[in-house]
Image (cartoon, rainbow, N blue to C red; front, side, top):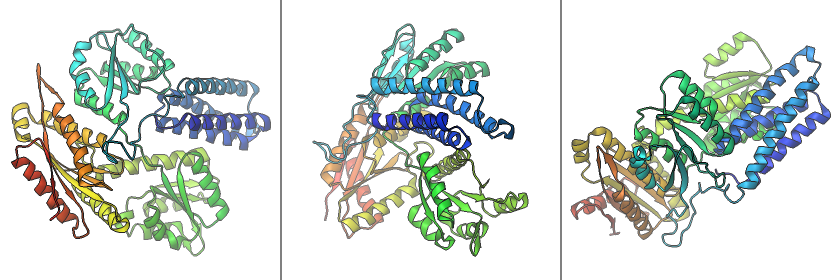
Length: 544
C-alpha cells in the first residue's frame, strides 16, 4: 500500500462532502459531481492496491452509475426516488465506516515500504533497507508448498503458513493471502474467501488449485479473489505474481495533453481529469502541439475537433507524421454528432470520439482505458518478455540518457554488466524452463535491490546491464556484491532436490571522455576479468 492514511482519509472525506451536497441540493449537477468522486476514489483504491476497499467502492460505483442513468431520463424530473436515495445513503455510510475502520486500525501500517530510501548508512545511496512484505499461505498441505515458500523468502518476502481453520489477525494486514483450494469442497473454499475479503481491506487474495472449470473460477472471483491459479499451475507463474505485488515499483501518474482553444473548456477538462488522479497540460494553439508533445510526453491527447484555422483531424494527421508519436492515443471532443465526421476522424488517426457536453465519468473511463492499453503496448515494445526488464535497445537508450544527465549536472555514474555463471550447464542439466526460471530470479533480485532511479535491463541471454546514476564505483560494488551473495544462496527446486547458481559482475565508472559504447565495453572487460578470476565475484575496472 503506497498511500498515507492522511491521503486516503482526505479522499474519503471528499466523497462524504460530495454526498452531503448531493442530498442537500439535489439535481443532476450535484449527483454527477458525486458520481465523479465515487469513480475517482474507486480508481484510486485500485491503483494503490487496497483490494477489499476497491471492491466495496466498485459496488458503490456501479449503483451510482445505474442511478445516474435513471436521473438522466427526462421522465425522472431530475430527482431520484426517495427510496433509492435512502438505500444509496446506506451504502455510502457502510463504505465510509469500513474505510474509517481500516484507516484507524492501520495508521501505523498504511505507509507501506514501496519506496526505496535515497540514502542508507552502509552503502549510500544504493542499498534497499526496507522491511519485508508479508504474505500468508492458507493451506492444510504446507509440505506441498515448501519449495515455493523457500523461494519467496529470498526475495525480501516474509511467509506465514496457516491452516484453513486458523483465524488470521486483522492487523497488520498481509500484502497477499494465498488460499489453497486443494482437497476442499468448493463451497467451503468460497466461504473462506468471502470471510477473508470481509476481514481484509488491502490484502490481495489469490486462490490456488482452483478448478479449471468455469463455475469454480467464477465463484472464486465473485467471492473476492483478485486472481486464481488453476490446479497444476507452475510455481514460476505464482512466484511472478507474488514478486510483482511485493515489488517497489509504482506506476507514474497518467499524463494527458488537452488541445482546446477555449480556456474555459480546457480548465473544465483538466479539473475532471484531476479528480481522477491524472496530470494534464492544456494548450490553446494547435500549432504548439508538437512542441508540447516533445516536452510533456503525454500518454494521450484530448483533441478539440474545431479550432480557429485548423481542425482536430488536421492536427492529428500532423502528429502521425512523427514516428515517436505514431502510437500516442488521440481522443476527439466535439459538439458535432455527425456520424460521417466521426468515422472520418477515426480513419485519419484518431482512437475515440466523445461528444460535448461530455459525461465526466465516461471521459475519465475512456481516457484511462486508452492509456492502459497504450502503456501495455509500450511495455511490450520496451521491455523483455521473459523478465519484464528493459530490453537491449531500451537499456542502451537509458544509459545514454544517464550520461547526458551526468554531463549536465556533473554527477557520478556507474554501469555494471552481470552474467550468470555456467548458465549453459543449467539448461543442459535441468532444461530450458528451469533456465528461464533462473533468469527470472536474477531479474527479480536485481530489480528489487536497486533504486527506482536505476535502470536494469536484460542485455541478452543470461546477461544483464545495470545503470547506476549518481554512484561511485565503491558504492556500486557494495550493492552488486551484496546482490551476488544473495543470488548464490537461492535454492532452485528440481525434482526432490535443489540447485543453486551464481553470477559474475563487472563495473565501470563513467568519465567525460567515455561515450555509452566505450562505457559498456569497459564494464564488459571488468566482467570477463571476474570470469577469468574464478567467477561468482564482482570486479571494478579502475580508471586508466
